[in-house]
Image (cartoon, rainbow, N blue to C red; front, side, top):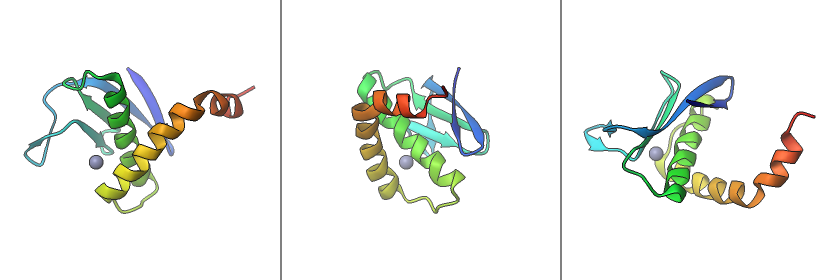
Amino acid sequence: MDKIKIGHHNYAVLLNAKSLEYEGDIARGLCLPETKEILVSEKITNEGMQKEILMHEIVHGIFHEASVEQNEEHVERISKVMHGFLQDNINALSKMYSNK
Ligand SMILES: [Zn+2]
């Protein structure tokens, strides 16, 4: 299972999670700070959509680890920009941030 580190914590990432529910609704993804898990529903088969939802849940994790109040609209807006930002800059960032 892949791990993503947010703040000081490793979050386990599961991209084919079964029957995700949140407050009685079917969820496409979940960030669970208590158990340090990020889940994306197995129902999301489109790779681009999977990444967008993953980034959305990562931003929830970032808000949590930064002790910033969760706001769904802010999380959604930031995650959309982050998704495009990573797609456009992943190679340059990987070079800049890799341990040499
Ligand atoms: Zn959300």
